[in-house]
Amino acid sequence: MKLLERFLLATLLGLSASCQSSNPDLLLVTADTKFEEGDFQGAIVEYSKVLQEHPENLRATNNRGVAKLQTGNIPGAIKDFNLAIALDATFAEAYYNRGLARFKSNEIDGAIADYTEALRCNARYGKAWAGRGIALLKKGDRDGAVTDFKTALSVSPADWPDRRAVEAELAKLQKPRDDK
Image (cartoon, rainbow, N blue to C red):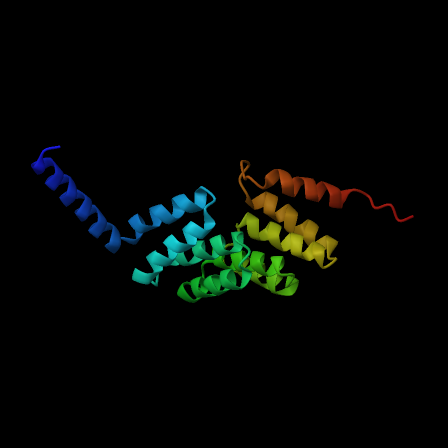
């Protein structure tokens, strides 16, 4: 490669790197890619880099929490979801994610409270209806679970990825009980 071509390439790469460091959306691409590939530890590192430069970035905060949850770091995940909620108290996804983390740590009442708050922020959030239904079922509230599963199905689109699982759970709950 000629000297001029190498200089231009190096200049372009340098400009690209400097643009990336100031643009959180560009920084998020690497983190999101690692997350989608299942490299949750790598995603955590990349989301942390975004947050070093842009601590107010809601998406990076929430997604880092999800990545931590995927690695089993429930306390770290909850901390990130708390930060996301502090950044935007109307961000339903952060409440849903914190509810999921609490459910995984067997804090069922806390999970129900978070799913309920997610629904206050977005009443058409099918995953939150389903999550709360599962938590209610774990507490023994079969009727509440049935109601939440029905609502999850009614507010969600026909191609909702969780539709079949919710329909199957609802069908099990609606079968007559054998009280013998």
